[in-house]
View (cartoon, one colour):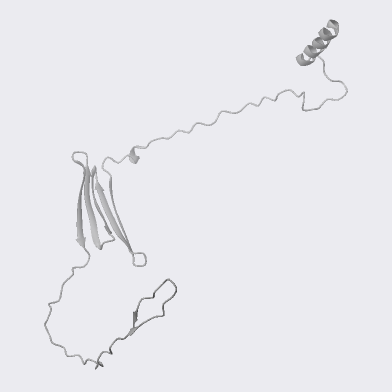
Length: 165
């Protein structure tokens, strides 16, 4: 019995090692040699910095505004830069009817500084009250009718309250 086990294990070891190849049927993909593909090196992109691209004193200025009566969206912004100094402001209309405006500046010496202002959109003026006497014709009323007490029939355990008509 031991001889059969040793022979079986030897055959399994030889088959696992790939020494015996199947003769009757072989798949063309099962035993194909691995294909080695030589990839060309990816091209290296170099960026050349031209001296004209760097601006030692940058300058810009922009502004925009939105006024949408349908949604009630009212806002605006403007900003300008001269070198390292930026000045600007933006504003919007709050839900309570005040216009909020933020004025700001930024520079390397003082950093970012902002000032906020709130101002009403429309100044409400009250008209002076003038005392006048207005005579309005009043309709004639009849004298009130006397109210009578109506008693309700009594039920088994419940007495209904009296109602006035």
